[in-house]
Length: 320
Ligand code: AVJ
Image (cartoon, rainbow, N blue to C red; front, side, top):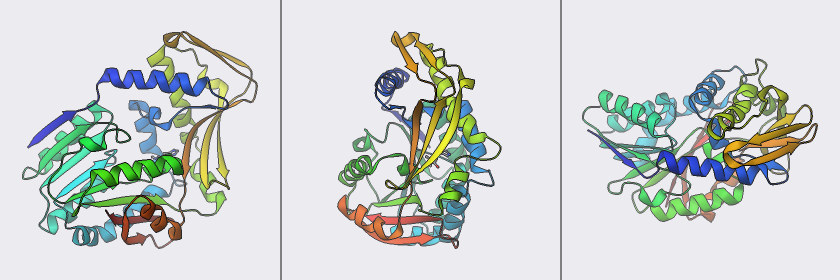
């Protein structure tokens, strides 16, 4: 059984890209939100990142879920899995299998901004689980949480440390919005990357083969294609920086020489000084002892948490 709700059209996305690029490239320092990395090529590059020797988060989270999915099913008693930013099929399958094993699973709700990608993934899950309802939702989970399907006991999962792309203030308002959208019987599952040796963090975001660098530069390709811009993609080098105060990794693109960029679709020309940096992503890292407090500030109670043996990554269940 497959149903798709569309709360975002291709036109909405095009407008959001225009606004983000205008705002980000006319501000100082220049920034772009990370959500625009993920066209087909960017998504494939991210998949490649998850298999890199240096990029531990995916493997660490998968190990925790493989070991603990049955406990997650038991403590939540969920009949609906809502996945925000429907990601890798593999982690989804671990959770669905555990909920089916517990005998509670009835419905899967993948949520993503990209309709094409979502439709394909949802159809595949529906084929593999003929007895489960698949209710896909094309939406921006930073704006459309009130539109999530209701009913039953919902487990809302945001895996892969995706929430780390937001600043603490953005996380606070996101979590409060989510708290408002949930009720008794619902629960939240978060995967969070932990603070660790900066050397390992930097390697994870600046791999030897340069896959992350290509992923980073891909945002310029997206803007060239979608907004008729003329970024010389090869004129920007990748940089990963550990911000020790904020405890997040920043990814930046640095202009190797002075650049003048025409963005025809916005009727905008922007200049880059030699060495000027454009921030394309933050990836916040968490401290185990602070997670409960942050969740409590948004109205959630921490129920359980599990960490991989190396202490690199944690998965937590919280309740409204
Ligand atoms: C998908 C946002 C969790 O921050 O680690 C990987 C994206 N950026 N390498 C992360 C990413 C560079 C990833 N998230």
